[in-house]
Amino acid sequence: MTGNEAFQNALEAIRAIVGSLSSVWIVYQLAIVAACLIVAFVAGHWLKNYAGRVDISGVARTFLRHSAPVIFMVLVWIAYLVIREATWPSRSYLVGVAANLATAWVAIYFVARLVPNRLLFWMITVGAFSIAALSIVGLLNPALDALNAVGFTIGETRYTALSVLKAIFLVTLLLIAASRLGRFSETALKKTSDLSPSAAVLIAKIIRMLLFVIAIVAAMSAAGIDLTGIAVLSGAIGVGIGFGLQKVVSNLVSGFILLLDRSIKPGDVIELGETFGWIGSLGARYVSVVTRDGKEYLIPNEDLITQRVINWSFSNARVRLEVRFGVSYQADPHEVRKIAVEAAKGAKRVLEAPAPVCHLAEFGDSSVNYLLRFWIEDPAFGVANIRGEVLLGLWDMLHEKGIEIPYPKRDVAIMGPVEVRVTGATKRERGER
Image (cartoon, rainbow, N blue to C red; front, side, top):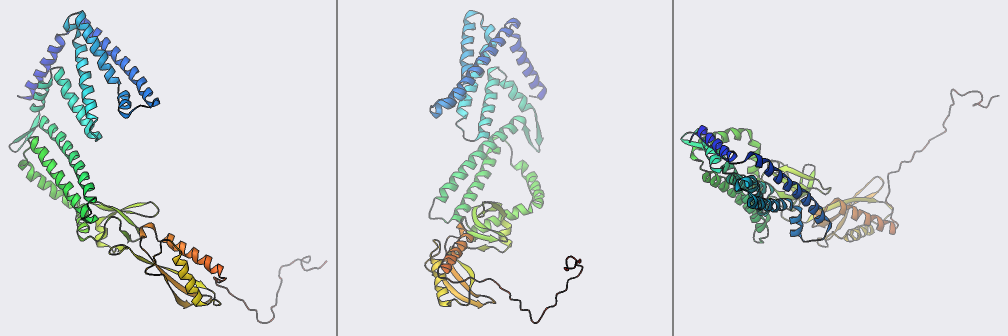
């Protein structure tokens, strides 16, 4: 069927529907439908406010908040039955159409609300209601014929508007399903104790990519699209896009390398340039690094491959930290070393083994300088804070023992008499009268 023939059939169906109606009763029916709609809107608005004021179950609250279409459906069905019994059936045609449309909308809307994805919910609602509405008014077959008549040909395959719409709907539906299955598999793999975190992420990403590919191929095949016909075109487009997306491809490949060699994994504490934090997640294009101040850096995977990365917890979560300090020359260095070790042991996060040690580092200009070293095993909780805690404990213990923490002093010696001249002074300033 050509496009012109399909259009003429649709026009004839519309003329048949309009011709079967009485012009006087059209106004009456439209007024009845409008009145039912206004009453349903007002009642639904009141019930929605009422649901927000009372303590009821979640299902009842949801029903009351969306009760306007149900009220309209009930009212218009009552009006249809009354008019049908009181006069000729043809004089209730529009009210009957409105009743059927309202019933279809209520059924589709409340069933589609079970779908958790909002995009898929609206696609199902609008698509199903459009099909139901066309079927109710008798325009479904003409509409399908019109969509099949409009299209284009690539090679030996013809693509119609209907096949394109089917492909879009199926691709969206299957991609959402693949995304849900990918998330479910990723969650299940993370709970598996037999797999390392990086291996679990790698397997989950491979599963998700395979699900996406299967979803796209299955949707296009189900829609009647010949995949061999677009293979050459997609290959040419892929080559053209590849030249412009070299960085994206590089990041994707680098992401797989990072997952395979297990150089970093979620939870590791890394340092890259001026960025210091722990890895929150491994993405296909970037790695999420969360710092102690709450900032989240999205670092491209390629940077982690090509640049120098310090992994504080690669093979062992233990990290050795250093604190430098100086005391007066009058203090006993043996006692100072013991005090420093005790101050480090007093911090909660400092490990007992390996034990903290304190070394005499050098004899400075105004102080004897020491080096205090201690170990922690949770660098993800910060290193500056534990250094500060150890220094504060060291400060308290040194003051308790009366040991002075010196600061640089400079003595100025004046050798011989100094002549002082006053210039530019007035007579009064010189004491003259």
